Image (tube, one colour):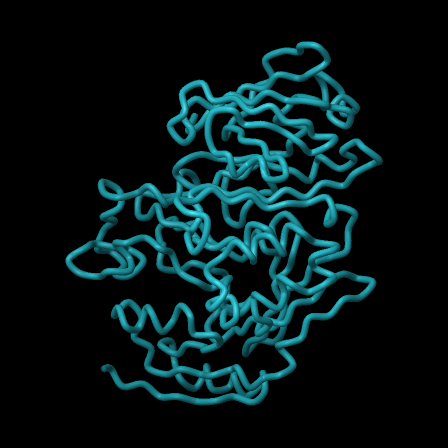
Length: 372
């Protein structure tokens, strides 16, 4: 066992002060569901741990006219079953319920979930595997190895691993912001700017500066929360990370979609891409109006009253010629070939690039392409 210093902070100021005094190898400790595992595996070897679980002000979940505020220490299970979250933000509740196991959700925190590290096997299991996240400059074994759960887009020549959780995908659909405090004071970071692309420095995963501590996650009150859902494709129905997932939040105008401009492409993981709010730190995201060509070719009104769309994605999840038919207005659908989980409340599979290919019976036909 490697020795490390342990400090229990009772205030935010005390925690930040201890982190700065401890140096670059200091880590904050909340639920511990990730850091303990990585320490046992030898991936993380902090010189000091600062226990922040005694900072009671960070446990609160509050609702106001401005929206929802989640304390960084709020437990995933508590947030998932919070009455206001289930009523007004089902996408958030669903994303949390579909993560991990009940035991882990009872311990894991909102702030800690955002900071969990990749599940790439080459990162987690150390030598003799090269990993630029774990050992910068050593290479990336996943490039020519097991890459099924890793990223399809938003990668670099140094790393193809990705944030593995569900929470951030849902938060992106809701335009959430992350409040942090550090030696330079307080600031708020839009969720889409919180995570960094791997680029030349894949070991730097977030935009947090040294010593900065997440205090809250804020979700603004909009008309999109109630018409929202989260879908997750995984190898088993519980305690499994996503291969592909989607978070969708729509602002409804009666039975029609009133704010489809807030729905973007979500290039997420290796087995496909989905139609959803854009994920943090991913490139090539464009407004759905531009993707569908409805701003010019069909007019925005066509999208508002769209009753059915056909998306072709022949390369996703190995289903040749796979198509999905979904009624956006009623948010229903059927996926006859693969991925039955998408039909729980209706979901849409699409490609990274969408081409409007025609109109049939009042429906806009769109062809999606993966990796092109």
